[in-house]
Image 1: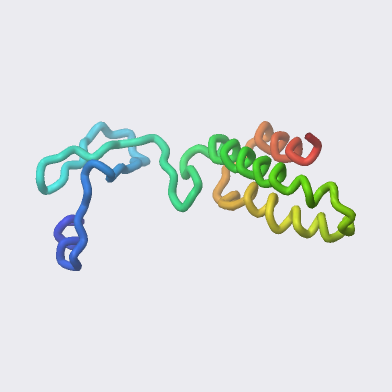
Image 2 (image 1 turned 60 degrees about the vertical axis):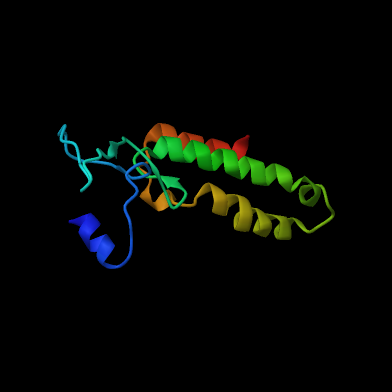
Length: 120
């Protein structure tokens, strides 16, 4: 049905690139109209964030935020006012770190890692 609806508007389902996540504990395969089996995965990246594993997504976000922080070394060592540096930090590093965080399932261990990001 999905392929038929997509074809009606000129789209094509690429069975080699298409993956799906199931919230059910079933072992049923999803087949395309051509008989290809779609890959079932436990997690995948959607709009830059891993959707099923908050810990994994946080680790990726933390690594990217550290990279952004390190690229701004000249700013941190400059004579710029501290308040301006804090605003830059919040606009860049924090934005990278917390992108997609509204969907995270935060446990105590992850909360400590988030707090630890600021003390390292």
